[in-house]
Length: 102
Image (spheres, rainbow, N blue to C red):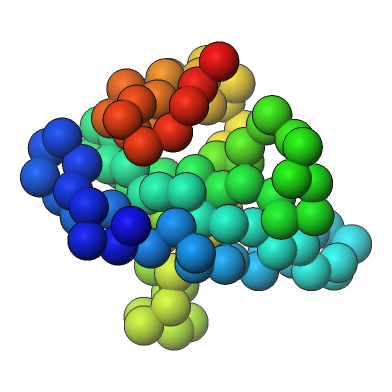
């Protein structure tokens, strides 16, 4: 799937890419990277929890450069519920041909 293109011509990232993030308690959680979308000039990662394949929810994080390590990105939580909904709606729109949304 890495060679497929989104409707806007941008390449889709490899869907087999696994991202491991730590929660507030320090627990490491693995996510499948579904896509990274640019919404209103900001990049958001759309992540699916690997430990719950029956889940119908995704996790959306904002991507930003790590000030301590410029070659690494930080995946930060998005607190604004309305923004989360807009980003998810945009993701469904641009990736409709690749994923089956209910």
